Image 1 (cartoon, one colour):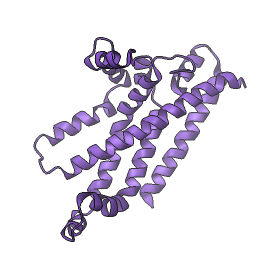
Image 2 (cartoon, helix red, strand yellow):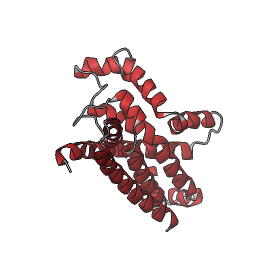
Image 3 (cartoon, one colour):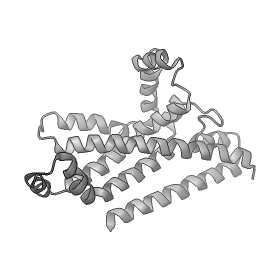
Length: 221
C-alpha cells in the first residue's frame, strides 16, 4: 500500500465533510425551526420544494449552477473575488460549498421532522410560565428533539463525505487540495489502479455504514 497516495484524499474528505457538516447542521437547524413554526401555509410548499431540490437534482446540475453563481461572472463570485482577491472555484472551500448544498436537504428533512414531533402545547406551557423563546428552545425543544438533530448531523456528514458530481464541477480534482475520496476513486479506476480504488471504496463504505448505524439507532431508541 502506497500510503503517500492513499492518505491525502482521505484527509481532504474528512476535513471537507467535517466542516461542511457543521455548516449544514447549523443552517438546517435554523431553517427547519423557522419552517416548523411558520403559521403561513401559503407559499410554504414552494419554498420547501426549492430547499429540497438538491436532493433530487443530478449532482452535476447542482455543480453547474454553483459554478455559474460562484464563478468569475457570477455576482457572488465577483463579490468574493473583490473581497478576498481570489476566486472560490477550484479551491478547498469550493468542495465544502458543494458538500453543504448537496447535504443540506437530507439534514433539513430529518431535523424538521424532529421539531414538528415536539408537542407545541408543552412549549406553550413553558411560555405561560414566563420562559422566553431561547429558554423554551434550550430546555424544552432541544431535549425532546435531540435525537433527530444528531441524526440529521450524521446524515449530513455522510452525504458530504460521498459527494462527487457537484464537487468535481465546482472544486475540480486537484491532488492534496480538492481531491476527495469519490473523485480519487474515479481517477484511480480510470487509470486502472484497482487496488487503490478498492482501498478508498472500503473506507467510504466503512464510514457510511457506521454513520447509518448510528442514525438508525438514534431513530429507533
